[in-house]
Amino acid sequence: MRIFVAGATGVIGARLVPLLVADGHLVAGMTRSADKTGLLAGLGAEPVVCDVFDAETLTKAVVSFAPDVVVHQLTDLPDSVTDLAAAGDRNDRMRSEGTRNLLAAAAAARADRVIAQSISWELPNPSRRAVTAAHERGVLKAGGVVIRYGRLHGPGTYYPGDPPEPPRIHVDSAAWQTLPALAAPAGVTIVADDRADPGR
Image 1 (cartoon, helix red, strand yellow):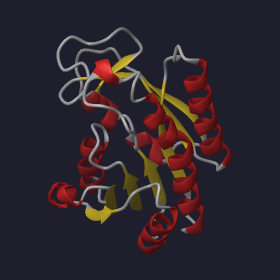
Image 2 (cartoon, rainbow, N blue to C red):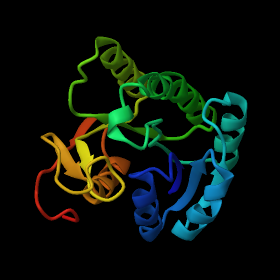
Image 3 (cartoon, helix red, strand yellow):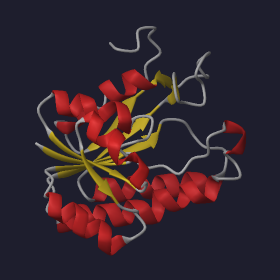
Image 4 (cartoon, rainbow, N blue to C red):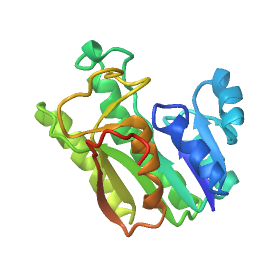
């Protein structure tokens, strides 16, 4: 399949891309940073430099690649967990405007499906919960698959050592368990696994 991964250099995306390539898929990896094109090429993806908030350029990029599947792994989160609350508006915009733009681009490209990340725990802020719910509804209305991940732990996450409270999942396992979504029926799937072996 031809798979367009938006957010390809994120903590899940950077692990997912080589798994898709190893399975024989042709992958385009989108990043908004030209500095990361070498990383994407090294992972086996065709680098695409684009900002999801530039709807016209995004649509052209997705249509040009002509994907069978569009994978939404975009977030706008800070490097430190202590800054999460202050950065909430940025991530809300990614979940709302970013998701709308990516869904529109996927529709213009006549992609067979969209797979989008979400979370499997309830946010304490009602407005944040509403944004997440609207994000999921948009994906489901488009006939897509929503993956509700547990709290990620492992290298590159907010919890590199001791895991957080459940629901949780090791980031390597999260990437590996994303693969079945390529063939899953439209709907919501949960990826949260507290087993000790992150690769199984």
